[in-house]
Amino acid sequence: MTGRPGRTGRSGNQAGAGDLLQLVRHGRAVTRGALQQATGLSRATVGQRLDRLFRAGWLREGAGGGVGSPLGGRPSATLEFDGSHAVVLAADLDTRHGRAAVLTLTGDILAEHAGTLVVEDGPGPVLGELARWFAELLVKSGHLPAQVCGIGLAVPGPVDSESGRVVQPPIMPGWDGYDIRGRLSRALTEYTGAPAVPVLVDNDANLMAYGEQRTGYPDCPAFVLVKVSTGIGAGVVVDGSIYRGADGGAGDLGHIRVGADALCRCGSHGCLAAVASGGAVARRLAASGVPATSGSDVRELLADGHPEAASLAREAGRRVGDVLATVVTLLNPGVLMIAGDLAGTPFLTGVRELLYQRALPRSTAHLEVVTSRLGERAGLIGAGALVVEYLYAPERVEERLAELGV
Ligand SMILES: [Zn+2]
Picture 1 (tube, rainbow, N blue to C red):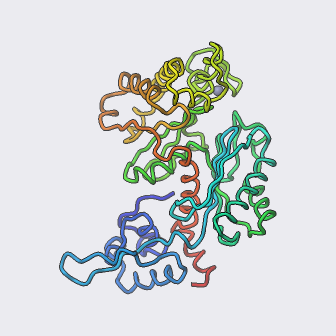
Picture 2: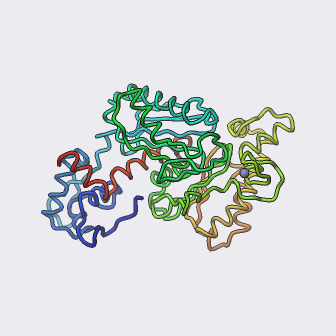
Picture 3: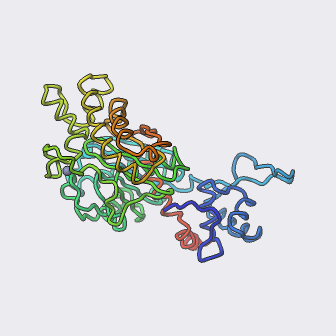
């Protein structure tokens, strides 16, 4: 969705206000001169388009005071996207836990809440409760409902991003095909009186990958994040955009059959998630008398250095590493990030053992295998960024500026 504009311009030649805004937002060109160079537009035309963005309150002169010209001319002021002219609501749902926040348009969290939200309770109650959280968070952050420009939601299942509906989710009973956008938007209006805003829904691993890539590795052309918690999923970001595949199914690694006979939550036997997820490690621990029922229990045991948990996590890492050898060979990513409850040294050691043994040296020569930088906030940050990229995409900017009358 974001692209990486260099010399840009839609319909063949003329870059519009939205193209200029995107160049500034992505840090590719942040002075009038750089925008002229990147777009081929005249100084006057760049000035006219920027004026509209200034009048809308979307752009401002940077605080830095300007960049001096190498030829000694007068410094040209740097331009900045104004991240505070509206706010985004974002939420990340896990199977038994939710996290919600009010964010600026540049991804700063202004107010945040985390608590119990059980996806098995079904979409109606869960989305209603989420809207209540959002209403409270708006009060806490000191923002009016009318300042909300959009909502981003991460869910633990496959999503058709066009319709925002979950498609045959293995672990979200009652959500298949449900109108998440409509329900969440209506519920927010009920609680706050806010007008309807766009709601974007995507898979949690996709949004975690998007959040981590944009904040930590913006120049990485192929980024893969694998989330290993109650289940296992992966998000792929290629050239700055989430890669979803033809049917939104890209990255759903958890239900690849790896030949074991453990029963998976999806109803099949032998899935990767049934033998190598946080849930699977918890079941193995429980069978030998260690109290653990979920991935988050395993996370706590690993943090305490529990030896059996560490050994099972390393074994799970080897299972996942075996599958990732294929992923890495196919995509040749620059960064492979491990996130979720099992992300830690034992699991990573297991991943590396199998990965470097099975993948071709050429596809791993420059590969960084790392753990999450944003931790539990990755999905939120990604969901917020997705909304901003949607609303400020060049093709939507003209229409929105016209609505504002500038
Ligand atoms: Zn399965």
